Amino acid sequence: MNYQPLKYIYKASRDATANTLLLLHGTGGDENDLLPIAGELGANFNILSLRGNVSEGGMPRFFRRLGMGVFDEQDLVFRTNEMVAFIKELAIREKFDAGKLIALGYSNGANIAGSTLLLYPDFLAGAILYRPMQPFAIIGAGVKTSKRIPVFMSNGTTDPTIDPAATRIYVGTLKNAGFDVTHHSLPTGHNLTRQDLQLSADWYKKEFITLNPA
Ligand code: MLT
Image 1 (cartoon, rainbow, N blue to C red):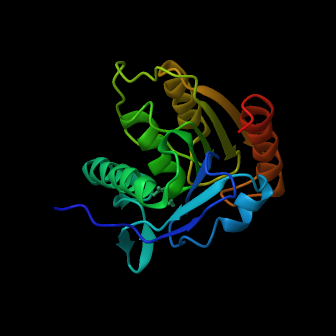
Image 2 (image 1 turned 90 degrees about the vertical axis):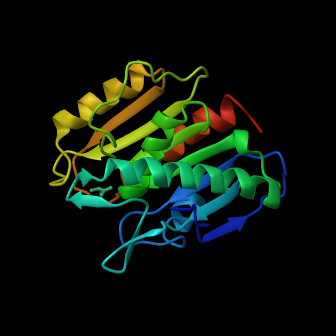
């Protein structure tokens, strides 16, 4: 199968050297969904918001699944490669720095962001993963990032779709791969809450504004 382009929204900030927030929606969403959440993190970044190329009964997704929480890993690898190739091309066309991408993904979008961290450990400069699941059942010990890449994760303790024990394993996997993970277990379900937004906005400010001003 050949790579297909992804539908997207790109909004350039005034500063061409700024970070770019890469927005990745959840199942059934689209490239408009996370724009208000990006606004919670500030304004001094470009925004690249993608729509997943897979349709599940008309609902956009970033990769196929075989059942609830059971991923088609072959498709996930293909779709991750497709997305990364698309972003690299787009960076040239839209003139943003592909080395300053911070993914912000919810649910299915968080899972392709996690897959990107694992398949391309030095590609993203950071990631915000809301309600993620470990994207691959087995992750080789050889997966290592060579940079300091901060990763924010938040899960809900009453989320019926994600087992807290599996989340603890995923956090350990990302840490073993060298990612600097900040993880929050919140007293909520699968939906995003104000607390997710506040904690991730504080994390973003600490990691990307205070420590690394653009
Ligand atoms: C996924 O398929 O990525 C997860 O099950 C989350 C979801 O999108 O429902």
